[in-house]
Image 1: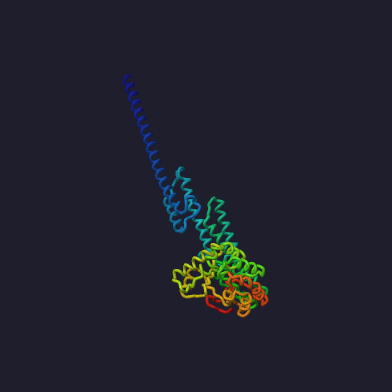
Image 2: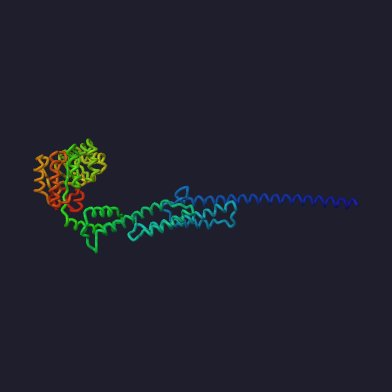
Length: 428
């Protein structure tokens, strides 16, 4: 019986040892499994983080509102391949959402790049292609708004579409405006200079060189028609603005609904800015006549440039209108004057009729010179600093209108006549 008791005790001890051993094995297994899981989590975290960082490089900013400039499909393809190679057999819940977000970013970048290429296909350089219609632009807008519905914004392409849409509107407006000047393929008989100028302004805004060149050819037909039916002259006034005389001249021009070109001195414009601005606001052309009327042919290149550039600034400040024409005092020109005009963006403009108002100071004599010298295409020289010129102007305007002359600015006359007025000339 004692032996039986000892045997049972021994069996209990062995069972206890086995149980303890089993517990140790289970605990060790749990610990090892946890360590393995932690290592897997850490490994997946590192992989997904690397993929996230690379996906972020597809975008141009932290808000992910636009893909970066210069992105190619090959760059997106490389990341796709990397996703496939590194794809985890069984995603852990901690990383699944992050991993799928990377896939979504890649899809977004690819779709947005496709959209960018479609927008680029509408233009050559910065200019919309001639065959593109506004409907094409609107279709692209719908695609962009589809991205916006998904909270994916695409500001850069929308700005491009706005620019292209504006180009199309300007092109269509120019085509329509020029087309209205024709009837059954011929220039309309009632076309006026104002119609031509409106069309010219519209054509100037067209971005396409090809379209603009075609429209210019049509405008040239219009100019020839107008030139054959009308007699144009340009009244010009130098050396002002003056005090009382300039205002009297301005009133006379308003009464006769005539436009003129005022070649102002910078010092006078600065001294009488209110008068200078009134002339500009009345719709007359503002031009440049130097700072203080020196003989430019006797000056150094530096002084010539200063006279032309500084006076341009002074006149623009006084009138709010930037001069594009320059008349050299006394009409004296040399190569330095021509070079300075080109450098300062001003076209040289002389005259064909000298009324000698500066010499005679007599209204009747001024009118006689106009009658004697004026022909279609003439540029008439007068000075708005002399009261005798203001006295003569109403009779001069009466005569010109009786002779059916139409008064235009110098720039308008250049456009119509295609004349070079950088040298003395005598009408067209």
